[in-house]
Amino acid sequence: MEIGERDPVTGQVTTGHEWNGIKELYTPIPRIVFFFLATTILFAVCYWVLMPAWPLGRTYTKGLLGIDQKTSVDRLVKDATLERSDWTHKIDQMDFAAIQADPSMMKIVGETGHTLFGDNCAACHGTKATGGPGFPNLTAGIWLWGGDPKTIFETLRVGINSTHPDTRTSQMLAFGRDGVIESKQLADVVAYVRSLGGTADGLDADPQSIAAGQDVFKQNCIACHGDDAKGKRDVGAPDLTDSNWIYGGDLQSVTATVYGGRQGTMPHWEQRLSATQRKILALYVLSLRKVPQ
Amino acid sequence: MPEFHRKIERSAIGFVLAIVVVSSIGGFVEIAPLFTIDNTVENAPDMRVYTPLEQAGRNIYMREGCYACHSQMIRTLRDEVERYGPYSLAVESKYDHPMLWGSKRTGPDLARIGGKYSDAWQVAHLINPRTVVPESIMPKFGWLRENPLRIDDLGEHLAALRDVGVPYTDDMIANATQDALGQTAPDGDFAAGVVKRYGQATQVRAFDGNPAIVTEMDALVAYLQILGHLTGAAQAELAVQPEDGK
Image (cartoon, rainbow over all chains, first blue to last red; front, top):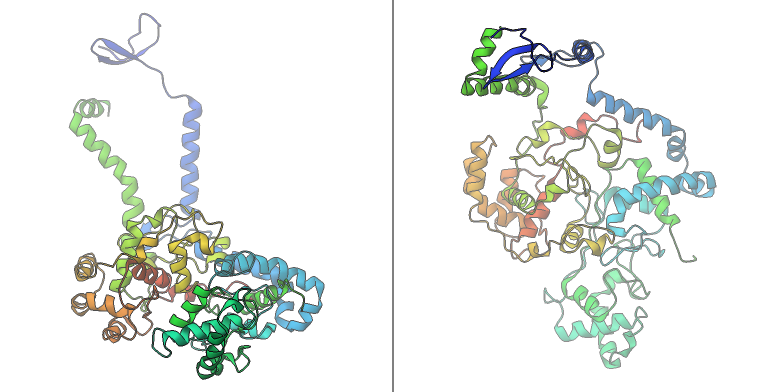
């Protein structure tokens, strides 16, 4: 068997390989394929020289271009920051009232705030900022700690019952579970609280129970919620006379609140968001207010 | 050369071995050097190990297949850094066996989820994601709150991890069960031991809201709340915080 033997049927040269009488025709790889192979090898050689490529024990060749993913992304982030700096700088410099009075700045706050809110706040407060059970509604104009932008900015910085050293702290005791009040007193105070105007069916309760509940309230609740039950902002105690309920105003929810207490937590954002971003968010949530002042 | 090829082609086993050798060259050249190059894994002296409770939560995370929809790797891309925080470093997965970087995001990346939301939110969200995020498509995991966590074998988990290089001490392994109890009961007898063994920054709370019993919910929430907080190396590496550069 010779290399170069011709196949009698096609007249083509064979490779000389024979498998059980079957011979293979010699059909070499087309030139164009060789060309591309040579090009890719050339490309690889250039790449080795320009980019980080070859391991050298404890280090590696860094490449002539000095490209590194980490410095690249740092530069991109920095460039983007610079690009925004014409308006972020203004936000840093201007005080809250000045920004609120400037429609062009508030437009920026609205756009950027919407994205920041969606990424960070919407999980708890909802995409429309209307809150949910245990998470306050931010559009009602009702604020536990105060509704001026500076206070909201501070709340964003330190959080509520958070792990931040300066955190705002507000803990409602478990009056029922810890045995501070008896179950009869608990039912009375729930009836009283619900009669304060918060719920439509609140006044259906027995007037005697409501009256008894008022005494229980005086003895246990006014320290935080105030004599008039309108809440106290320095301890983050909510107003019980309005129709806004964080944990629900039905009989079962209010009973659960008084029985087990509430320690709602808001994380702090000092490490996660920059001061500029928190400033934008404080102004943004204020701009979401739906009810007239 | 043709003679050599003729020979090797005619020996089936020899040819298979030759294929294996040749095709492993690529892997050897690309992967093996990473074990010797110094800056493959960054230096992070403050890196701490998972507590037994967090490790148990990690096991639940794997059991429930969370990694199928959630990645734990913030890539070195501007949009990811601006949304999720500093890009992930290799050292942050140093004690992950196996790593859970993931390859697909149906839900968001979780590499820095720790501390972003409250425990109450995490619990409500795991029981039924739709109650807090109406547009969510995540399945419910409510039973985690009903299931007591198996804590009697946590020491063995830690011992197995020590065999693959996680620096758990004998003290940590011997007290693993107690530490799991302690981390969920801040007022209990065992809470001080957890902080002593795993550091002041360890989060000791009733993660699911009930300090009386250690549930799988406790473990999973404890794990989620530590993600991205085992070391501060990533924050230090990204010197310029987004928006702050002037």
